Image (cartoon, rainbow, N blue to C red; front, side, top):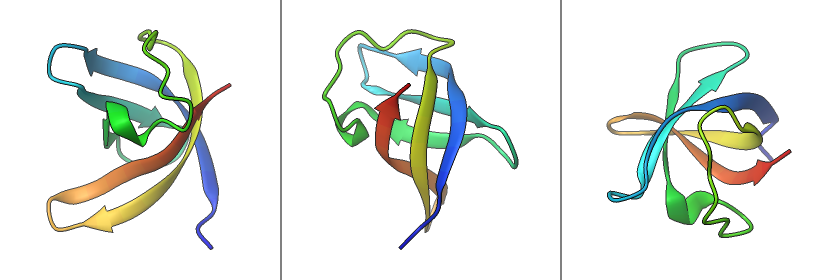
Length: 68
């Protein structure tokens, strides 16, 4: 099982449904809106989040994202 990390929403484009999370440790990670556990449509830049990072071909990506 992957370790959960914390960070905050650094960039989010609601029209395209993706953005980036600034991690407490490491480089920013990409996410899709569908990767949020709650399906929260009210994602705001600066929201604190918890997530799991998985390495993909195009770089690390956040999954199982929860707003704190």
